[in-house]
Image 1 (spheres, one colour):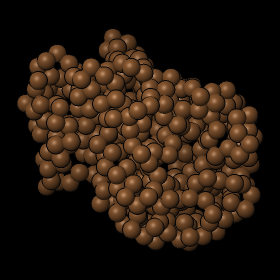
Image 2 (cartoon, helix red, strand yellow):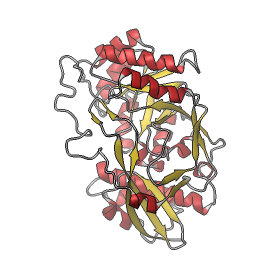
Image 3 (tube, helix red, strand yellow):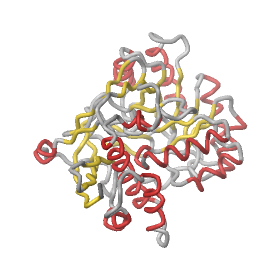
Length: 380
């Protein structure tokens, strides 16, 4: 079997609530979901999720190749973009194509990807995460109550500009999850909103009033010294990594003992997650993938020995995607459908007319001018 071509689709996810973080919010609650379909001469199609704007540049590395050679093809894609680099859109494109390759490999073996990767158990421990910065306190509680009913014992709350508000919301979500655990795991994500000059002080203020399991991205993603200072200055673990691309970005953080929970972005693909997990395992550190539509990296998470917990952001899936998994018992229960277990209904996708809100020029994925440069955190 050989790879013959690709097709790009664009669907949306309807969250039913505003979603975002301290840097910006999609008030309409609709976000775009790019899908790439990798075609073969054997009749099978691989499904990859995530942005792939550079697919026209990267695909020649795959054309005519046997899709079963996934890890070799991953390195072939990296080699193909050697001259202009593999960050940003390019790394995302490689990740989406890599996801489609793994989907094909498992489909050829006629088994779910978690089995192809060697997992013994289909259950993936998870924590709830609402991208909840814009929710009112009442909406926040109502949102996490549905996760408590599904057995979840951990959750992540967004914050960064108003410590007192953040502490209050962490306590409210903790109380909801006490239905399942006397001491729920609470994660606190400030999405790089703090500067080096204030991160330790603000993290300590939160920790004095709330028992947090980890604080996520307290400073800029590449700031080894800043992460190390926070890690040394508080009791909770420091988590980071979702925006890092390539092992070369992780090594300085791990070498400096600046991270306690190693994260990966789901949109960077399966091979990236597996390699970062191995690097973290070599440092006796746990790994935790951040959430994305349809939870595709959960298949790989089930197969690595140092997986801690996977972020899950919603109970529903994007328009036109049927996914063979269940969110129950505090985690993801993967199914038996071959590959990623994602079935694409192209007619349903073609029929939908909504547009997403992540990619508009004004944000919310645009870093505010004063991020990290505020003398005093200020609520918006």
